[in-house]
Image (cartoon, rainbow, N blue to C red):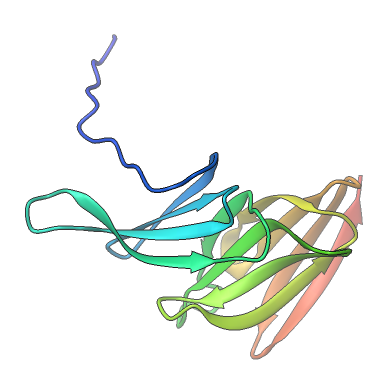
Length: 145
């Protein structure tokens, strides 16, 4: 059975391709090739507006929320390259406090959250890497297919 859909709103805020969307708490995060993360919130009249813009050094392809230990939420950004360094940048929400990086051999193309606080990355070499957070340290296991 076909269920009709209706567009109720169009949001303008980026100057390049929007590559990722993520909902967290009462906010919408959008990541774009314009090197910006926009944080959107609902206004009193029900519209969405940008309430914060976070600039990153390079364009990004994925924005994802990882609550590895259930106490804090981590915003993970992939597709970012700082010169020759390929990494996933980690920020604590809602403050955007820098929480470090997870390094890769090539640009990370995909991120996924798994059960039990696991965090998966896949890079351009075909390497799948699995992370888990142990207190303030990261445990890494890499698998190549």
